[in-house]
Every structure is written in structure tokens, then in C-alpha cells.
Amino acid sequence: MTSLFARLPLLRLPVALAFLIPVFVLETQTPRWMRPFVGRPADIVLGALVACLLGWAVYRLYVRLIERRPGVEFGRQGAVREFGSGLVLGAALFSAVIGVLGAFGFYRVTGWRGPQVLIAPLAISVGAAVIEELLFRGVIFRIVEATLGTWIALAISALLFGAAHLGNENASWLAAAAIALEAGVMLGAAYVLTRRLWLPIGIHAAWNFTQGGIFSVAVSGGKTTGLLDATLTGPEWLTGGAFGAEASLVAMVLCTALGVWLLVLAARRGRFIVPFWARRSVPAQTATAG
Image 1 (cartoon, rainbow, N blue to C red):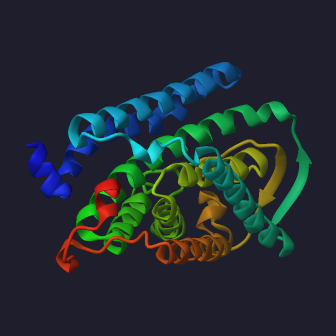
Image 2 (image 1 turned 60 degrees about the vertical axis):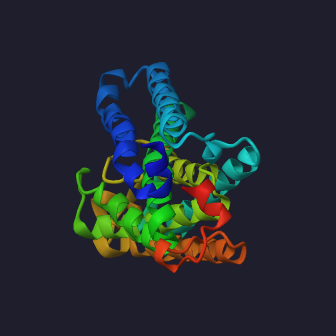
């Protein structure tokens, strides 16, 4: 069985999903569990910490048991630099989105709250980023890429990432398409560039936290209470409406531009993998990426 998995990486996908999807479902339900504990930040932090550790442990178990290799996607080399760069990029990116919307009068600040409101959004943002990146980039993108190549894997993982948000509050096909185009491509590109999960996790976590924890904008359809007391009004196609600014035209343009830039950098570094039918011999990086 192991030799068959080695020769046909795509066969590993159902097995990997069986490992990770229960953790993903668990994490997506976590905010509902946390509603009774809104006044207890320690419980929210503990829940997010448990989700992260569980996701990491399950992924590591899958990689060692099925793929029989070390989990290089969580390698310590470059981890601090890549995660830190992701945090800066994610925070700057969403701040730029709000800056544009604010400049045109769609986003207005009416007050601010105490720093204690930052705890829950921060914990939930990190938990969601870790689990979702494990599933969509660490499993779906990486395994599909090993057989079908980078471009097809990018398209498939981005579409699935967008579709996964259709079940959220205030979701729409437009919002799902925006998530697929901007976040699915951008986060996939971040993984291709580094071949590790630290950069996409950092971007993902900082984007969500800045969105909900700082600017009090709905995160993927869910209402949030952040540091700034503010209102976001205007045409849904331009501001994202009730789903949040990540479904806005501004976010789509800025995030897609960053995703393209990351892909250009990855191509220059020779990080792309071609489909199996275009290979004369298996590239060395395929064994690591798949």
C-alpha cells in the first residue's frame, strides 16, 4: 500500500481528508461552543490552543503513518521569519482594504473599545488559520499538486476553499467566488513560494484578526466586536455587504495582486511542479511537496 501511495500521490487524498476533515469540522463549530464563554477569555484561548495542537498532531500522524516522511511543511528553519512576514502582510493587506473603503466614505469609525476585546478574535483567528491551512494547503493543494501540477492544484484548492464558505452566515455565491479568487489563490501562492505552511498561516491569521479584532468588520459572514466601533456601508459588490470586506471588489483586487506577485516570485525560484503527463522524470521537489 505504501509503495502504491508513493507512485500515485493522488490516492493519498481520501486518506488524508479522513484524518483532517473531523478536525476541520470541530474547528468550524468552535465559535458556537464559545458563545456561553464570551466573558471568559481563558476558555476561548484554551479552545483555540487545543484546536491548533490537535490539528498539528493529526497532520503529523498522517504524514508519518501514511507518507512515511517528516512533516517539512512545519519545518523550524525559517519558521519565525515566514510566520512574521505573513502576519505583517495579512495585517497590512486588510488595513489597505479598509483604507480604500474609508477614503471613499464607506467605512466610518464612531468610537473604540478596550483592549480586552482583542483576546477572543486573536485566539479564534489563529485557530482557524492553522486548521484551514492544514486542510486546504497542507493536504488538498499539496497532494493534488504532486500529481496534477501547481496550476491545477491551485485552481482546485481555491474553488474548494471558496465553496467551504458557502455555509457561513450571510454567504453568497459572490462571496464564495471572492474568497476563492483572492484568498484561495493568495494563500496557495504563499505555500508554493516557501513550501511550508508558516507564511500562509501568518497571512490568514493576521487578515482575520485585523478584520474582526481591529476594524470590527464581519469575518466571513460572522459579526464581530473589535477594537474600533465602526460602520461599513455601501454597495455590496464594493464593500462586501454583510459577509464582510473580504468579499469586496477592493479586497479582490488587492489580494489577487499579492497572490500574482507571490506566484511570480515562486516561478522565479523554480518552485512550480508540472503535471505528471508533462514530466520526463520526477523532479526532486515533487517528493518533498507531495
